[in-house]
Length: 385
Image (cartoon, rainbow, N blue to C red; front, side, top):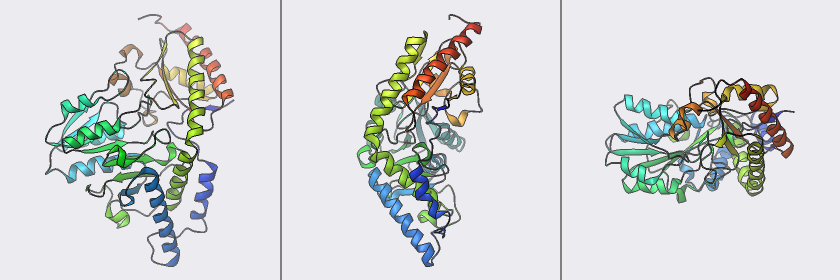
């Protein structure tokens, strides 16, 4: 049996999404920037897609910028807002549990002379408003806190944090990549100025992202050389990807209610099964303020990579954290940030369920994890710490 439990890294493209994309690879392949009829027909499709996404997100469609990924979107929004607003201040704030593309963007700005502050996370993996209040000052340009953590699945109170930033005159950005379809995103209600999404996290194609930027806020472009996206992002429109992302987003929210109930039940079944079979395990991050598809578990006295590799041979595909760090075996900065003991920073597995996950797969996973961890513990030189 093969069991895919790495949906936080990427999801399977929904068959209906693929079907919606196919014409724009073959029969309707005109460049949406061309002025002939074929191009303008596709520009209309582009415009319709932008309007549909804006409606779902409660956004101004003029603020939607299509990108190649959420990594590009995060780079554009963080660097672009900071560089365009240097007269306003020199201070950037990001949380301690951000995705590497956010952390590295802030680090690059620091090299350019900006001050960067890090908001700590509490033991549950949550960012508290009072911690932001301690760091923010009159020179703060931008605050960036992710909506849902990619490793431990914790949900932040973005509306509350954005309110703090606004009170001090700072712009607010959130990486919402892991939020769809688990949270209903309404940009107006959240009060954010900027937001990032990635299509392949919710049944859409890889290579397709989105940056939302309040039209009243200017950000220096990251990619220049063409007039696409009103000069905000140059490059030929990826119309198949844009159509696929639109379809995937529509389906994700149309089918959201039923999916959330089912995936939570499966996630709880997995945790209950593991708890009954294995001692010395714990959930990393809040179980309450968490998306229902995520289960990040610390297995005491064994290496997470060893568990992952052994499970892979048994057909169970999981991760030890961020997919972007798969070739880097350093300890997770997220787990360190929430205070996990250094002895257990490399003893963790992230199970991320999806639309395709079944009860049979969960039961098989429980059996395989129990066998794997039990066997590895027999060889562990550490039995207690």
